[in-house]
Amino acid sequence: MRSFRWLSSFAPQPSAIGTELGQARFRVLNVTPFCLYLILAAHFEWQAVPASVVIGAAGYIAYALIWIAVVRFSLFNANVRRTLATVLDQALPALGMYLAGFLAGLVAWVPALGSIGNGLRFGTRYTWLSSVVGGSLLSIAFYFSTDWRSIPGVATGIVLINVLVPLYVVVLVKRLEQDKQEFEQRAAHFEEATKHDHLTGLLNRAGFADVFDDLFRSLKSRIDGKEVSAVLLLDLDGFKAINDGCGHAAGDETLQKVAVALTGCVRASDRVARLGGDEFGVLLRHVSQPQDVDLVAEKILAAIAEVSAPRSDLRLGASIGICVLPHPDLQTYDEILKAADRLMYEAKASGKKQFRKMTA
Image (cartoon, rainbow, N blue to C red):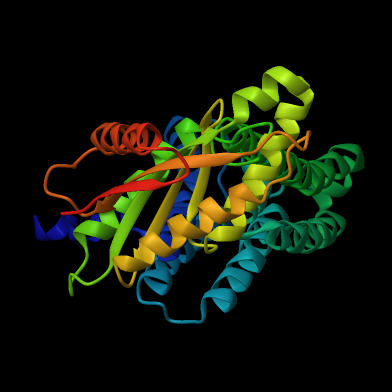
C-alpha cells in the first residue's frame, strides 16, 4: 500500500488550498490523453514520435506533480503561486507546440482549459493574464515552428481559440453570478416585504412571529437572570368610531399615526408590529428592570391618547396586555400571544386606556 500513498495528494482538500490542489490535479488529467496517444502511436506505429515530444510530455507531467507538492506545502505566497502557475500553464504548452509541431495539435485545447480553470477558481484577472501570456507565447511558438508556419490559418485559429474562449467563458460566468445576486436580492426583498404591513411599514403577524425565535434564544442564553423581555399586545379604543364615522381613508391615516407614535416610544432594538386591524404588538428586548416595562406601557398609552383624531368629538386610546418573559407557563409564541390577548381584554373590560401585566 505504501507505493500508492502518493495518490493521497489527489484527495479533495478544503478551503483555498483545496481549490488550488483541484487545479493542480486537473493539469495531470490534461496531459493524460496525449500521453496515451503517444503510447498507442509508438506501439502500433501510427507515426513516429520524436524523443523531444516524449521529453516534453514527461516534463509537463513532472511540472503537474511537482506543483501539487508546491501547493500542498504552501511553498510560496498564494498570489505568487497562482501567478506563476498561470504563466507556466501557458508557457509549457506553447513550448510543446513548438517542439512537437503538428503532433501537439492533440493538446491545442490545454492552454484554454488552464485559462478557464485559473479564472474561475482564482479570479478573472488570472484569465486576462493567461490570455495575454498564452496568446503571445503561442504566436511566438507558431512563428518559429516550420510545421505551424506552413498553415498560418490553423495556427491563428488556435491562438484565437485559446485567447477568446476563456475570456468569453469567464465573462459569461461573471454575468451569471451577477444575475444570481440580483435574483437573490429580489427574493430577499420580496421575503422581507411579506413580513411587513403595507399600510404602516411595521412588521405584520408573520414578521412578529419571526422575531420570537431570536427572543427565545436570548432568553435561553441569559446568565445573570436580571434582564427580562416583554410582549405588549394592544388594541385601540375608539378606533371603530373613527373608521365608521370618518371613512376608511381617515382610519388608515390614524393607524399610520399610531404606528409612528408606537415606534417613538421604544428603542431601536425593540420591535413593533401591526397584527391586524387596529391590533398592535410590541416586543421589548433586554429590559434591565421589570418596572421599566410599566413605564413603557404608560408612555404608549399617553402617546396614543395624543394622536389627533379626524373630528374633535372623537378620542383615541388603547388597552394593553403584557407578558413579562421568561415565564414558566409561557414557552411558545402562541401561548404568549394568547396570554397577552386575555390580559388586554381584561384591561378593556376594566375601563380601557390601561394595561394588565403577567409576570413570573
